[in-house]
Amino acid sequence: MQVLDTTIANVSIPTIAGDLGVSADQGTWIITSFAVANGVSVPLTGWLMQRYGVVRTFVFSVLMFTIASFLCGVAWSLPSLIFFRVLQGAVSGPMIPGSQALLISLFPPEKKGTALAIWSMTTLVAPIAGPILGGYISDNYPWPWIFLINLPVGLFCAAICWRFLKTRETPTRKLAIDKVGLALLFVWVGALQIMLDKGKDLDWFESTPIVVMAIVTAISFAAWLIWELGEKQPIVDLSLFKSRNFAIGTLALCLGYAVFFGNVVLMPLWLQTQVNYTATWAGLVAAPSGVVAVLISPLIGRFMGRYDARWFASASFFFFAVSYFMRAGYTADSSFMAFVIPLLVQGVAMGMFFVAMLTISLDRLPAHRVPAASGLNNFLRITGGSFATSLTTTYWDRREALHQSRLVESVTPYDPAFQSAMTQLHSLGLNDQSAAATLMRGVIGQGYLLSSLDIFYFSGWVALLLIPLCWIVRKPAGGGGAVAAAD
Image (cartoon, rainbow, N blue to C red; front, side, top):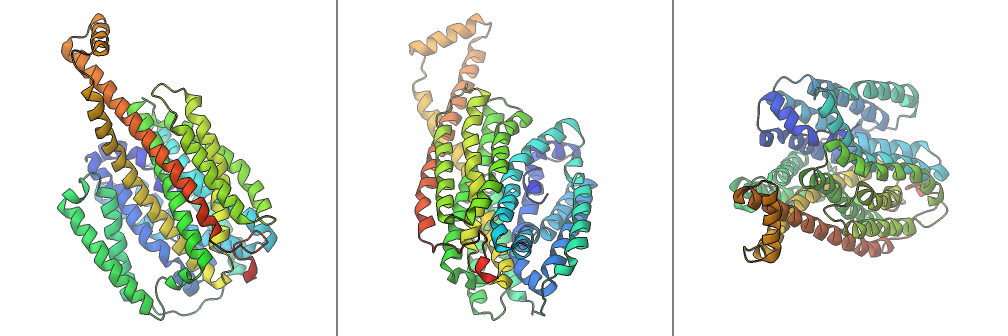
């Protein structure tokens, strides 16, 4: 539910904005508000779970997320919806790292790999399923159902988890609240998320608000870093980066996820705006990759305990690269199956990626540090996804402008191909102005196609260059679990 809600509203912004009587640009605050609040709360997971217990914090988070989802569904105006989205993002922070910590603590070493593999399906499949579900609901039902569908699932999960896990509560201890660290974290993460979400719309550093946000982010981050490194009980435990596996594994995970998420954003955007796919059909292009990931993940988890996780991590980056390079062969008139096949290859990569990277990142960490490590790991992954979204969409538009300018250079009244195209359009009943506009739309479409191919090529090379990172780390402990040695 939590991962789904990061993307499900994206395709529904025009519908929601229209219903609430605001512009689509104002409606994007529905996404930004959730991202800012969630970005601040995720790294607090370690502190919360040490203070109140893993089970109690997780169940409370699920229950509050469900209540916040209901409030979003009954919102009566844009300000009220944004406020409830802030609440939804804030209370949902512990859900992802909390679920990881519970799985690692509940399962014996030989089954942790399978447990994490099944867990990883949600994080990789949900961003793909979100636009499909959001588009379908927007096309067929009132938009509040985007949020109201969380109610039965959330209530059921909260009840079941508390019923069966309350006896497995972890020890708690009273911890002082690092108020200064918390305040600085809120400032720099909030400023960073707003900068990333609004940068493209405001033309990045040509805009004064974006420049101000960048300065605030840099200063507050530097102050937060200095403060946390000198604090005895920091709100975020940065000493985790002393572990080579955690530091390098988290870096590889964030970069790999950023490339993956950038392409998750790009594909439906390109298909809907340039290839005339509906939101539902654009989502269906990516759906088979999620099915492949779901089928392969349990199998990978079973073998993770028998073989070196670094091989699985390397294989995941290799298959990601193959998928991206295959996409670099797309054409404007590619068939539905031509779009789908490279994403099936991506599904194989998705089935290996998360479980391998988590096994490496959380290797040999003591059990009591896993919630903090998981929270920090997920925070950096989410931030990487935010960077990827902003950079991918900005680069896509700017490369299109470059390709368009070069294509237009060859479109002149003296070019035989141009004259032939104009003659054909005239025969269809179009006048000179309409025919020229039609040709220009074709040039723009080709520009976006070439820009997309550039991104696919770049993504493939980045994926290949990440493979060596998998071999700088120590060989993870056996047993398939990220913290097998800690038990």
